[in-house]
Length: 336
Image 1 (cartoon, rainbow, N blue to C red):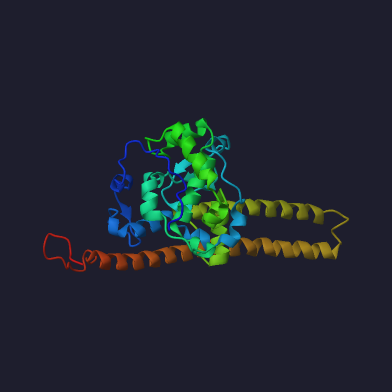
Image 2 (tube, rainbow, N blue to C red):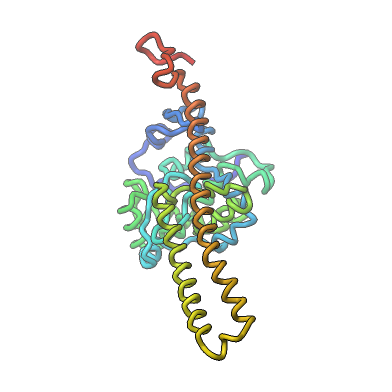
């Protein structure tokens, strides 16, 4: 016996029943970075890559650091908070925010088709809550639940349409009916635990991944990170220069204090002034060396990872690097 549908209303007016191909994207990227079209025999793998959030589930015990266990705020509220809404097709970036922008995954058309749910997302009973954490239906239910919070008012619906977050055939009346059915059957134990939380701060996700998972150089996501090494150097040396400005103020104050009759004979203050003077000479050199060493480590790590990926990728493509010989003898693609 299959689990009950979260909704049975049909909000996609221009799609025929069981015409699932029309609901899927034109292509998608596999784990090996091959571009393929979604195939019926490989649909589970496609849905797993599209819907599951294993990286967030692996740090679920620390999500309280990154956000509150509450539904996300509506889209109009995001705009009021000066956040721009950025489309992100990666589910693990859905509702992640940084600075003045928030990443939102558009609603895939196939998640709004009850027949697609019946055929591909719902399974028989007997699953435990632990097993359901990586279940496709649990992730899909949680994702749609997040949208019932994001699109609360008609103004939110208008923003969603403008940003391309909903299929064009969805109407406001249809969305209201869908939300009513989704919320009538909503249960937090039936959704993926990631959706117990709403908005998650990217900077804190990066820190959690650095300190809890050991991803020191990469963190959770490179989105919003430095694209150029000179930008990284500039920002770090700018922070160092700001700290040195405070050191200069302290040294100047000490110099003035040593010129006074009250502190000039004070040996403790003289020793402190001497120690801080030596510190102000050595500390900037150590900090500058640390910044350069950190950037060099990042460069070497990225270079090594790129070369490893290039070697593996060329093997999968069936070609050899340019200038090292060509295995292809004909004009057609290599056989696998």
